[in-house]
Length: 308
Image 1 (tube, rainbow, N blue to C red):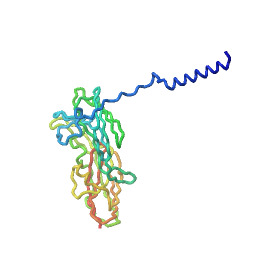
Image 2 (cartoon, rainbow, N blue to C red):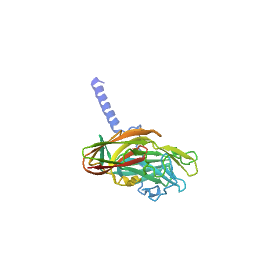
Image 3 (cartoon, rainbow, N blue to C red):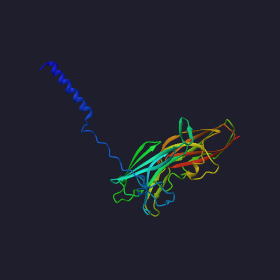
Image 4 (tube, one colour):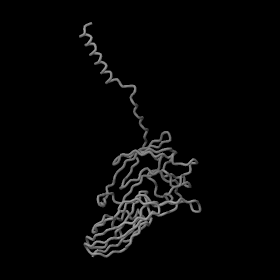
């Protein structure tokens, strides 16, 4: 056999081998994940949205949300996020004690407030809660639309050995009511256009207690990292955040600077800050200084400013 023939046979062999490598699937390919058997009939798996008429007292905080032992209700907090969002539950599935959920997220555009170099959504914080109707060890939530998230909540790791909930530091109404930890040195100021004034303020990592009446109680603190922000608001302040958040607006007619604006607060620690106000336009203003704790608590106080 001549060298030319041997070379030709070798070329044909390499050509055929290449075709087989390209078109023959490998038996070592990673198999694709089996599709979940989704259903749009979610009422048998979860209660969503969470009804408004739930009991106000008797809740215990857990690692994944809140439980009400007397009413046998478990509220699972899937997501808490700044800004105003609308969540629509589109599909559910349940397999191997895992509850699968699909949500469509829609961001509702609102005004923003700018503090120095930081621009943030104005006042709103959205919560995504569900009430499971089945026994699940974990929840896998897919959130699509204006955000793309996969959230896994391990329920079984947050229970005690006898399935009683772990008591924490979130009491009913936590994050809704003014904790009154901000103290301002002045409540009323009279200045003229162009004038500058400083108001001293302080905030304390206050102690509070959570527990059943007559029983053992946990000692907790309104501490953690804090952001202070300034807004204009109504003459009469209320202790409800759901009320105040709809009344506060961006600042106009005043130039306001808070120093420091961001800090971390230890238990029982008191941190002082300064509010600098420069009058730009005549009028009466109710300046609110609001503290947003990273743990969800809120505190606010108000100064009446008359500019002449």
